Length: 318
Image (cartoon, rainbow, N blue to C red):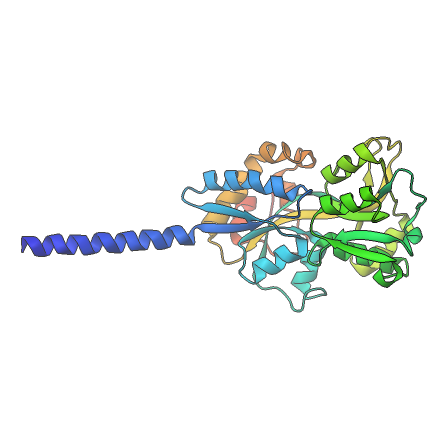
């Protein structure tokens, strides 16, 4: 009998160990960030540490990504969390191009900060307005990046398309796109991120830069394409030798999660973000004044139940 009990204990221990291993595996989550040279990569690193501390036992694996690709990744269960852009995520929820159908697994966690679509040329460029891009070599991001989709939209708003360019370079990172401009292999590069963008600052130190403005007519034309586009302003002094404000296309960056994730874990993660905003603002100063109410603003993407629970508790959501 004694040996039978020992054997039984051994079997139970092995079963517990197996279950524990399965549990650990289930608690390893993926977080898709963005291209190198943008703010999502370092911000993702900060969130990794924050989330792992907020929910003991989970591990966050950060992966490169992009606005559209991240939404598709969450929907297709290839990632658990990701950064998104309001304009493209709303398109996903509604099943508009470039998405083939409405999403069913993409939930809103938090709005984060405004993003600015920047059309960059060197300081000595003769390009003054969007219409001047015709016939030029441009550098945009790879398909799946929200900024690439915006690049196509802004050309469309001005009666052009990629076919009107002398060459279109689809680059994997903002740094690579800026390098093409620096080397003279492109005359324009576009990006969508916070300001100041590190890739633009690096280019400014070697060649000098200018931002091409988007006037009110351009903003109105863009809003007809996607209602999520709004007018933003890159303040004077954001980049070296920028002596005046530059109007640009703007939109919101936000954080999304799989709707399948446990409510309690997303609640804890949302609370960590709201109460430790200073840690994220240290990476992206545009988040310095973000409140729980800002995070809970309705942008047309359904809230994850865990996030909604936290926002209701603090009075940020009714």
